[in-house]
Length: 142
Image 1 (cartoon, one colour):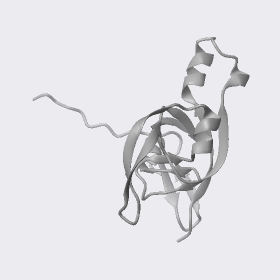
Image 2 (tube, helix red, strand yellow):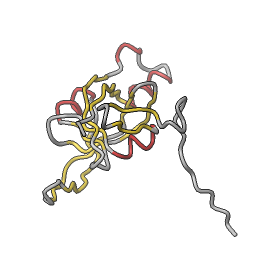
Image 3 (cartoon, one colour):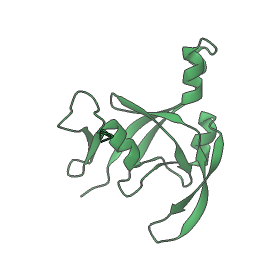
Image 4 (cartoon, helix red, strand yellow):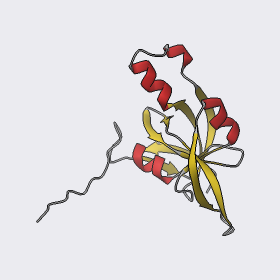
């Protein structure tokens, strides 16, 4: 089994809102292209500080991160950004740490993407190849 990496475009979600409202020219939207590691052991996405700075993302609090060796550390968390992989996109927040972009489980679930470890790539869920599908449990109220 090999490491799965993917090309990703990260964009400041607040900038995108300002463009939609006509308050910011599209060429001023802050974005960052990365070769990201898919980390199925990580629940959330991770951005290095320099990427959060480049995107102009505010740090809106802290979360406790648990490392693979069991250490716990309080780390900053970003405001939302848009994550684009292949033809799918979703908004996420990220923990700020380390030196590379990591794609975690929540982003993969929201975009309905699966790691193909044998071919070292991400693929659309074969059950939904044309678009992401989100599972929802209906509350019946009965």
